[in-house]
Image (tube, rainbow, N blue to C red):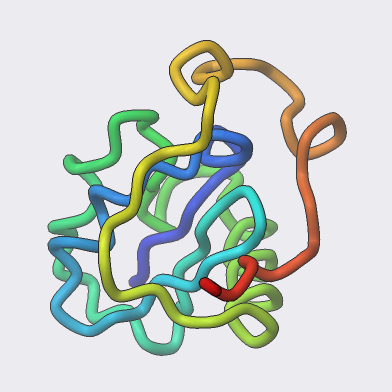
Length: 113
């Protein structure tokens, strides 16, 4: 079992989950996070920390596509190990439907200057 980040993280990118992860398995895209399913130790401490309720156990129905999605982008994006401020407007976009089609960016997080 592993945990995965789903589409409600898109355009919100709360990082409360990153602060509690004991294995640093979160990776940061331009406007969302993903979990590397190979690195996740299934501890579950991240799930209740997500204000957007975007983290799910892979055993829930329909999570197969999210496992592949998280694995794909974890391989491309940089690891994130410290919490950051959420994206501007995150509270307004929390719960917006169809974010994958309307808001998702494949770009990795910008490097800090």
